[in-house]
Amino acid sequence: MKRDISPRLQEIVHALPIRKGMKVMEIGCGSGVVARELSNKLDDGYVLAIDRSPKAISQAIKMSSAQLKNGNLEYINSSIEELEFAHNDYFDIIFAIRVGVLDGRHPERKNLALDKIRRLLKPGGKLYIDGGKPLQEIFTKLIQ
Image (cartoon, rainbow, N blue to C red):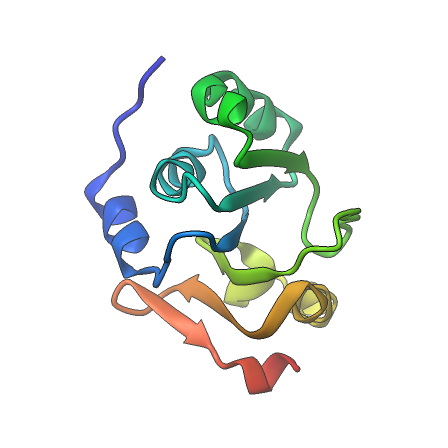
């Protein structure tokens, strides 16, 4: 099943400063639309997409068979605060679109989320959330 990406999400994909070979994480991937688009652009990179909803992850997996076969896309059912990630790799970019723990809707968990993100970013890595035009960078110094 092919699903077209909305203009808003396409704008976000274009705003992310991705380059070949990067490792990127999406927090709150939903049905995986942006993760698939990034996976297609980063054929020699890696995309990890997480979501706290088992239903969303199941749908994302069903819609991503080609990208999953390529081996550069992985889905995990988890919140960022509870993510257990066994790989020793760190991410160049982590981003979130409409994720309550990072946009102020769940401030009681924000510090846990930022601590986990800090540990997953490479030195010099960047965190982006929606809310800018179309994204805003959360300055690394605020989370390190």
